Length: 142
Length: 476
Image 1 (cartoon, one colour):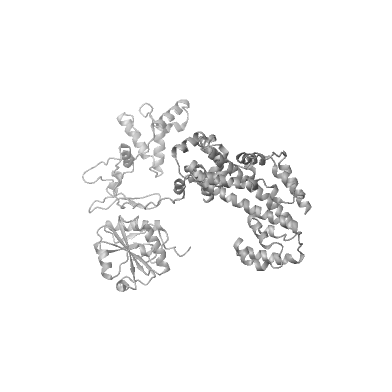
Image 2 (tube, helix red, strand yellow):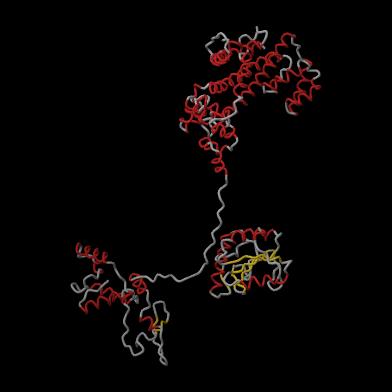
């Protein structure tokens, strides 16, 4: 589904995308289109993209093509999703210990919508850290 | 061979009981009609009975003599190609007076007859040819193909391989291979028929071909003609089905008067037994069921298609449901509830308010030691400014809102209970009318409780005191 979502081909594009968005959450997926985890995530992202278009916008970034952020955001996972609002990185407490990003592939659209809504609500009130509606600490147990 | 023959004979005879032969009439047209009227009455069985004795199979055919006549008629009627609307209209209203129309209806009956005759002659060929090549009849089921093959290979099974190319023109390559294999296997035990018998077989074969030819001619003629008589119907369901429906109803006028729900059941072979023999979703497998338009469709919509039978409606059925775009979710803005609550909600909030006493207890006077007591659990509880009142206020109003309350109905009920049994000690809990009946027992109970350190009923006691003091009924 990655071909349906807009790609950001350079670091400048990523910066502009994050900066220019005034009142929407910018959701960026860092990874590779060919990666199986990214494919799953992209499927979910594409599924929600139209629904959340009023308060969020979704972009894809190839971490090989655009390596600018790999060090800064520690993008060593095959698939990473991060949230930005008005040029600010919004952290999210997912219960996984890493509050900076979602570093696994989600396959539940409703859960993703809930997370994006929570990020929007928190971010629009000026918060830098929001708490995920669902705890993902037991993600690997099942 | 004879067993099979007798069996067949019995079958035919049980089907048709009446046997009557009408003399052939010389006039062409009447000949045709007589053939039609005859054939319906078991002529076939009569003729089948002559299998053993018949020398020339072609002589028993009823259709063969009228083939030339049919040809001339087809020629005659197919000349006027033009379609006149007025003519069409008149033909609808006076269907039975039009010769041409009559002929078309006759042709339809005739086609059945020809088919029957082909089947009959096919049987004859099979019976006679069986000793030569018994397997051929199971390999090639189509009478026309069967006859063609018989005419091709005659009794020459040994050299069947040399006919391969010609066989391939008649039937499929795989079939040809099977036929050749079977033929070669059969050839050692093959029986050579007498010339006379085989000649008869060959004649029968050519008769089958001839009948088939006239059948094709008739159907093509019908397809042309029916588009003239009922252009709309034949355009929709095809000429063959149209003619069948016309026969069943009698005329186009009658057909148009037939209710739509009855049309699918026209031409059902045996109306009474359809429900038992046909467990599928479609009840009525009549003419309409067998027409190309319906047969071409998937099974699920066949039933509906038979009812509506119009192509664009069928197209509509086949189109997938329209894609509806996902509606975007609204922006998740959190706003405070606009509802502030009314009197009831305010009262409810008041009930859980912190009392002034508690507030005072939580304050401490500057520069003074706080009084404290040890509670029942052995914990030291600071009294804060609850004793002194603080800020110049000596008496702290006790919050009456936090008191235990009873509903009016409860009060009434308890009052009634008290009246019925005045001695019941529980009644003293009612507190309903302290001024008329100063309740001593509740006072004693309250003091008892306060001694025990439980302050639960203090509010109650105080209320009673108040009531006694002001001589007023407390409001619950």
